[in-house]
Image 1 (cartoon, helix red, strand yellow):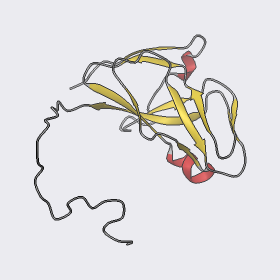
Image 2 (image 1 turned 90 degrees about the horizontal axis):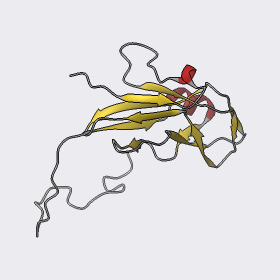
Image 3 (image 1 turned 180 degrees about the vertical axis):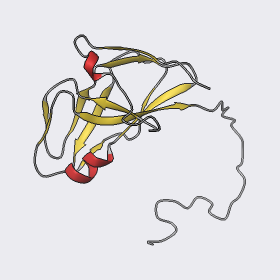
Length: 146
């Protein structure tokens, strides 16, 4: 089923419209609307120029680009970042420079990718007890280093 996601762009940013590089890609590329520098060891919000209206029951997930991660040690601080259906502000990408040198972002650079996801209908039910499993409460490395 195809859905419609309404969007508008920041004034003068029609050339930055999100699009997929290939027709069968999962994600739309998000681009920077400004020139800026990402200092090492810091998070910085990079504006994309995108404002959108997602249908109720959907979210947009903003994820790092693998090439920027591999070649430049850039990631997103809150990955995946969630954009809720009720949000109408500009999509900002919280980028983090893990490298040792500043990284220059130029207007039009692809900075992240965005996937539109359908949300399941769920109901949280408070109970007195949960069922037992072999794992139990084990987490945070409980299965050992392998």
